[in-house]
Image (cartoon, rainbow, N blue to C red):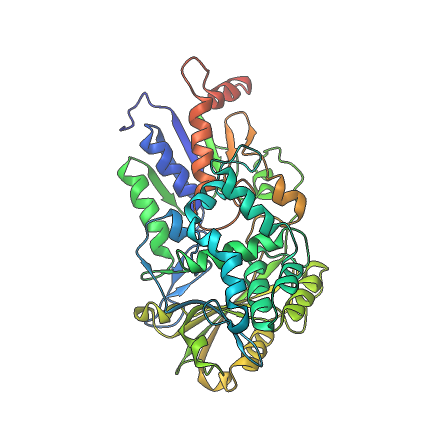
Length: 441
């Protein structure tokens, strides 16, 4: 449906994946849509840039296990989705020795029906009848426990325990907390089914395809626009964290912020000298040591203290996409508001499992501290009770704080757009215009 001058108008503030997904949905439903992005390019934390001459680096999101299942973005798969090096051994999803059968029994049923599970997990809210209740019950039985408890109960080897816990801390939450087992199992099942691919040519390709879809339906996308007050429109979608929305005068629920990350990119003159060469085949590498070491580091971060050995996420996108050049993407989990320099922490952690790493580094680009990439602390309350999407008369929030949560999947924007469509069924007044009238606009 093409928008006309009589079509309702929507303004989307923020051109990240959720904002662009909302824009595409609304434009395709016949709305006139404007997207306003304060940055010079679209993408938010899903962008790419030339940090080193002749190369492509991802500025935020790098590997896309959720995106692989929900978005069409020209995915490229490394030989191995994920690896977890240890000082003695390596955690690999298909090479876990005596724990392989147990690993497969834990993850296999989820991986084989990953579509059903994602339908449940990526839905508009957790508190609804899931479309696949049997699958949800099966998943819940595996995921309710802390990841450390689940791993200790099931696995005999440190490699399997560490791999599960490393997968779990994608939640930016200590793995000895309830429900972190769900993250560990889900990310492991994604690795075994759709994989953890990268976007051809850089993460920017993900948002460019979403933007192309929105533009094809008539949406207008403007960059370099700083929004300082709530726009006037029939519907406004805010692709931002709740505390950012509050600056525009929107009343939001109290929402606790989470920890941050410290990002560093490394230009290499040779492959990373991993002690186990199989780690060099992985698109994503979890660098943190044993399950106990990771749990300790994440507890320190949650308490506001910088650990000596933080959990470090490493992405080797060039393994799947050599056209990017030899850039190693890394970030460390750090406390909220971290003011230090974690470059050395990251280098020392990698050196533990790749002796001689410093010798293959030709140049370094330090992005530094990035706050709260999950749009809020992933504690139990905020995990189960996501922030409401509707935050005012004609105003909706679409970010990692709203269902279904953080991750590059675009579904927070999709559900916001569909909720807007339901709110504007025939016979209902235009909520945004009604609010403007009451303000005397």
